[in-house]
Image (cartoon, rainbow, N blue to C red; front, top):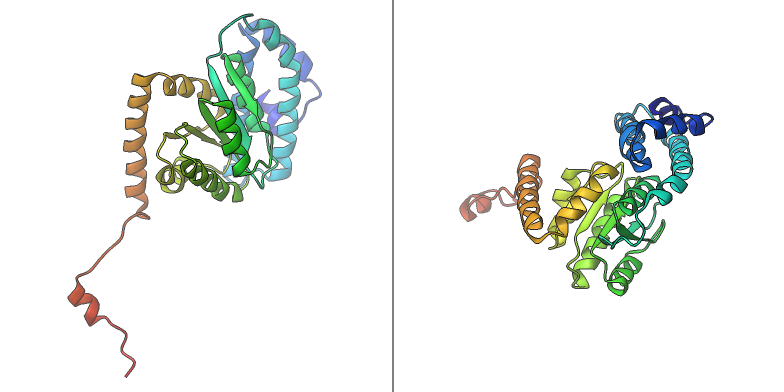
Length: 254
């Protein structure tokens, strides 16, 4: 499966997945296990410049096909009448049409009992804010693959703050990172902002955010981690000198 995803070959997926279903207890375990491992491998290659966007698109198509094959099995394995674990709004931000990561998150979280409101791709900040308020969601997940998505995520966080929302924000996608989250997104939004490396982390982090004690512990961990990243980067520091020294260094035009 890892080879199939890396090469973007979907010809033998049905046979491979049929075999995997005999080995793994649940269909969702295949997504969270071998398929996610393959996607992470592709993400690492893309990040290292050893794979390029057209190849990643082929991988995305193959992953989408695998999820489509597993979806009926996942639906049949869901417990009927199970209470919703929480309501999650997902969106690929404005300017970005890539949704494979978001779609995987949607499947994984739905299988863990969360009610998913998927707004799709190219979603403007105002739509995210409006729907979050209307649906009274428990958390928001933002996804993006390309670099401009990073600035748009900051914009969404600013708009959420302006609207007075207090909903945890989950950040994910190939170009996102803990450093960008610590430097750019977390400082403009007072509620918890969590960067997630891959979709398999979403359900466990979401459950912590919905438990008051676990949430407080997670927030403390994040604050410590983000502060360390800011210190290490040096980008948040402002070196100052005394007034006398500044006056000595004044511009001399004569």
